[in-house]
Image (cartoon, rainbow, N blue to C red; front, side, top):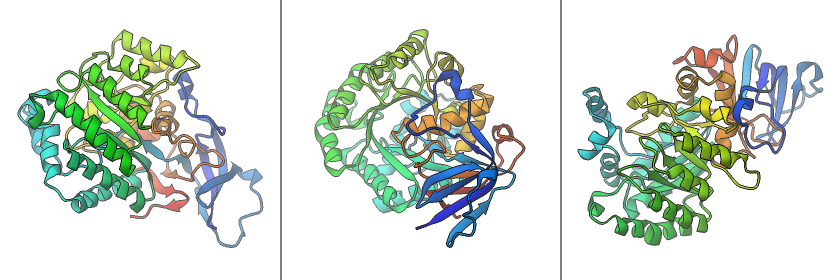
Length: 424
């Protein structure tokens, strides 16, 4: 049995009772802590913690690994509930196009965007795709990410979508962080189906989805419900089919326009609604009503500030959502076109600087709420007895606010996943 003891922590951050699944609204400004504290993990799970003046006599226990965290904070590791980490290649040429003034939609109309990534992925072997994704995830782990959701959606054929999900399944076995997988075949309409979108829907629902279920490749299902992509009616068909296979929805909605996707996602009890850069009062009202209903599941809004930063679109309305007593989660949206970064620390800074979230609110959004957005709140997201000892130990910093304040700097000393340090 492996035993790990952290002592002299400046504070343990994010102390939560067993069973708490999320933090809502303005309560997100509260981040319970214990100062001058210790934490014990056994076999990768948190077994006890408390202030140093109540440390039991275990420091001499045989085989006990001790980390002295003097002057440093101990936080739950970051949970990233929206990524496209499995992709073939970067798209820096489109980055230059954006600098020259082309919009996301104009680049897509010229064969760029998602279709560009799909062409590159179809030509790449599974082994090469795995090696590239593994390298990205190892970097993300060193940056504090202990759980990640990975979507398909850059294949857009049965063979290539399955290839992406099989790579993600291999990554689950190869790496210690928790990985959830999502079928996102409805990410864009392939060129070969441009004149027959109903045939592509049939391919997703009647051919691809049954194979994904048979191989156990996806935990969730997703749709890019947006003008010029997939309609609300198509979203509903896919969410219904996913629910029948035990795959809740985690859906892309309201990135550029509001077309009713949020209301449909609520109706079909999606796990999360992601992006939300363009929101109407009716959209926010619908989410608030859903979260006030005690007898119904409501989706967690997941905001992606580094996407807004990179393609210069509005930031999701974090403050408005929290003022309506709605939980908010944060994610990177790591992908080659609109967010070529999986660094959750930068997301923390952007959430505070651009979305005007308090540091405590943003940390709650990146830990417990983001864990809940991928059904991992019973394992991760807080310092709770019985949860995984997947933690961040900061460097010596003056305060928690310093983490987002001094953006672009590395404030992490040690990342632990199941009580084991992540090594370079």
